[in-house]
Amino acid sequence: MDIQPIRTEADYEVALARTEQIWDAEPETQESAELDVLSILIEDYEEKHYPIPPPDPIEAIKFRMEELDLSSKDLEPILGSRGRVSEVLNRKRGLSLEMIRALSDHLNISADVLVTKYPLQSGNAHNRQQNL
Image 1 (cartoon, one colour):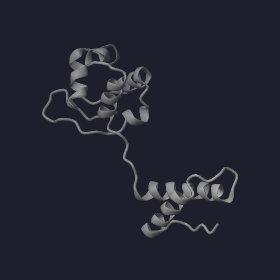
Image 2 (cartoon, rainbow, N blue to C red; image 1 turned 45 degrees about the vertical axis):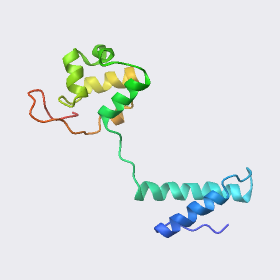
Image 3 (cartoon, rainbow, N blue to C red; image 1 turned 30 degrees about the horizontal axis):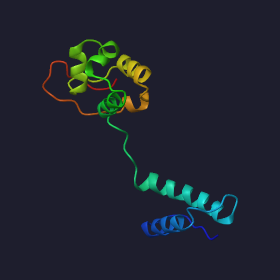
Image 4 (cartoon, one colour; image 1 turned 180 degrees about the vertical axis):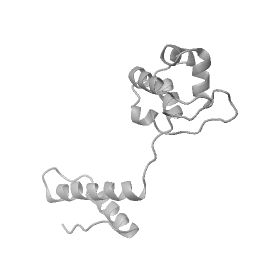
């Protein structure tokens, strides 16, 4: 097993190819150990060179609503009035700390996702700086 750090795109491609070759390695073998180490190196390289941005909070809410088969009306007990739910989902009102806590509790969406900044529509009286 000759494992080297992944420093370049070429190194990354070689590591991916080798990982594919030994993907079905039997547990507790030399190839299995190599696969474990390569996986860590590849993950580290990808985090540095191909970071995945956090999800958009409103899209996360809509996705979770779809998963749970919820309508906007179902968010009223969580966020307040129908108007407030509409403003939030249409990006005319930012999420408050109270809303973030309620959404996190009721929809099981990580607060880390909900506090991420996201664009709001401009030109609305209720438009204020989003997220805290």
